[in-house]
Length: 385
Image (cartoon, rainbow, N blue to C red; front, top):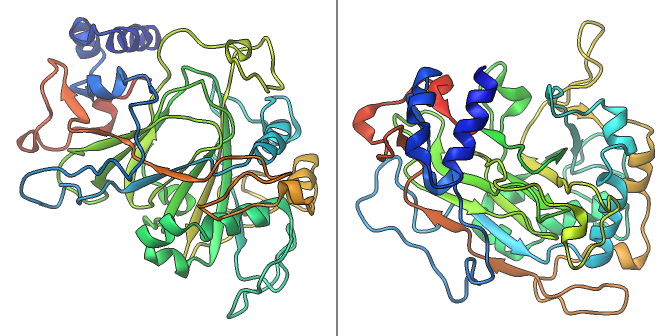
C-alpha cells in the first residue's frame, strides 16, 4: 500500500498536481517533500543550460551558514568524453547483463548493497589492478590503461583545478557505477567513507561521468552540508547528457531525481548508438571520488564479499576492458581547448552552467520550507521514492 501510494504521489508531483498529493503523503507520515521545481524538473532544452562565458549565477541577499557562495558547488564539463571513449564505456557497462553487473549481483529492486573500489593515485606503477605502496611523488604517466588515463584527465581539467584547489592533494580515487531505469532515483545523501560508519569523512570532490543519457532525472546538488541546522535553501540541477562530466564539492548533500514521464527506449534517439536497441534506455553513470585519505577495506570472513572501498579485483572481463592499454583513439585528453582530430572525435570541452533553484524543499501545501520549521526527520521527507 505504501509503495503504491508513493508512486501515485510522485506521478502527481511530476505532472503539476503536487497539491493533490497532500492528503496521500500526509497519511503516509510525510511532513515535507522535495519542491515542485525539483520533482517536476524542467526538461533540458538547448537554451536551458548556457555556456559560462555568457552566464554567471549569483544569488542576492545576506550570506549565512546555509546560503550559497557566488558560484554553485558543482561544475559541468560537456564533451569530456570523446565519441570513441564513450563507445568503449558503453561496450563495458551499458548492458545490464554485462560482466560488471553480473559479477556483483547488481539489481534495482530490491537495491543491491553499495559497493566501490579504491586505488591509490601515487603508485610506483600506475596500471591497474596492481596496488603498489604510495610514493611521495606520482610518476609521470604516459599511455597507461583506459581508466588510468580517464582519472588523470579529470585531475588535469583546468576548470576543476581552479574551482577545487584541494584536488591537488588527492591521494586516492574511489570508483562505483550505476545502471538504472528511467524512474529510478537516488536518495539525498552525503558521500562518505564506508557510508558514514565510524564518523563522517567526505571526499575532496565527487564526479559523475554520464555514459548514456536521454533517460532518468537530473542530478541535484545542494548547498546543505552536514551539521547545518536547516535544510538546503538552494540547489542546482545537472541533467544527464552523454559524454558530460559533473563535479561537486564532496561535502554537500546531493541525489538523483526520478525520471518523469514515459520511459524512453533506445530507438527514441535519432543518434542511436545503444547496445540495447529496442529496450528501455538506462541511465548509466561512472562515479569517481577523489580523497586525500580513505581506508581500503579488504573485507573479512564475517563481511560481505563485496562492499565499500574494496581494493580493485585482480580479474574480471569488465576489468580487463577497463584497464587494458588503449590505442590512441581511446587515450584521454584533458585539453579543454580540444579540437577534433583523426581518431579523437569530439568537440572542445565546454564548461556549462547547472540549472539554479531557489527552493529545494516545500511543505505538503507547496510553501517553501523555512529555517524556523527546523530539520524534519529524514524519513518524513518525500523524495519521490
